[in-house]
Length: 158
Image (cartoon, rainbow, N blue to C red; front, side, top):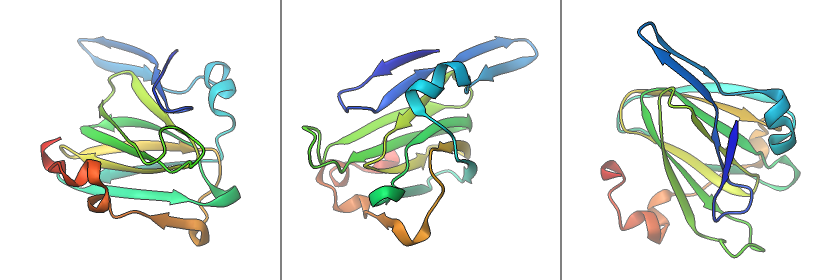
């Protein structure tokens, strides 16, 4: 596994093992020996399927319930969108976007303190590994169209 830092502290592109041949594709998106130091423990994992054109997010959990996520696209193609809500960071309020394609050998670690969402460019399935359990009483959201950096763009054209 390789890790590529971004301008956002802790937000990391993960390049994992991928092998493709005439039978199909095989990937290893999680290797405990590689990710444990970078991510920590996985408390829960969940899968979501989105139809083309669906935007899920921007969600986040607050306080000690804030989750770190590791996102991998299994089918289709999604635009992963993360907004830095950490007021003590120079990237506070800035938006990170990365296209994740099915089984392409890349994932994204989104640290606690970010609002997170995905836009499905085509029918898509993702898996989210989370370091803490979902706590519905601590969840908040942002209307993505209220963000200047996103509202000036038509998200369908990303």
